[in-house]
Length: 280
Image (tube, rainbow, N blue to C red; front, side):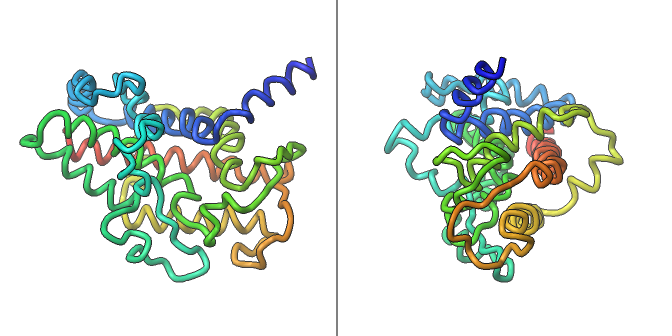
């Protein structure tokens, strides 16, 4: 049993970080949104995605909102065709300086600006259907990206990719702060009961859905500083950079589970609000 467990973990950790959080995390955000939009919005989503063949990406289908949620990552290997969108997945706002999107979002090349842009395209019934399908896929994905804290705030370290880290007793050479939040931490958080993949009451939704995309950006940026960097750096998210590996021990991981759950839940409910605004 122990050998099988370690073999399974090895297979999991051997995959690209993009396909750990991004499949389970993005699809979970999409599922929460699907369960919490109005029925007319859900029907409109299905109608638009019936045209997903217009994207001409057969290796990256978007037949459901869950498939659409990972489309923007799936197309990355398609080369120059979609290379313009690479910087749209994140915004590296320094967690040790006052919050400011002007630099990271110059010329609209950041995740929050692209959420706003694709929301406008999705709302506009005069936009060609191919562009609306793409806008829907981008919007679903980018709202998920914004709620992965290390896509919203960093310390000049590529969103924690330069901070080598151990996850409990596991310390593969390829592990870093970003890959831990992408993969094993996100998967454990989403799969920890009670399930966050459910219908929420209006009273539960209202405080989460309030605010603007800028407000949500600041929220995720604060989570990055207080709950990603601070636990990894001995309590001070702006303390000295570690010379070696940092370790998230079992007690720290347990404290981070509800934080990671909250980010997925917020992403799903906020996406539901935007979809209702665009398609309801």
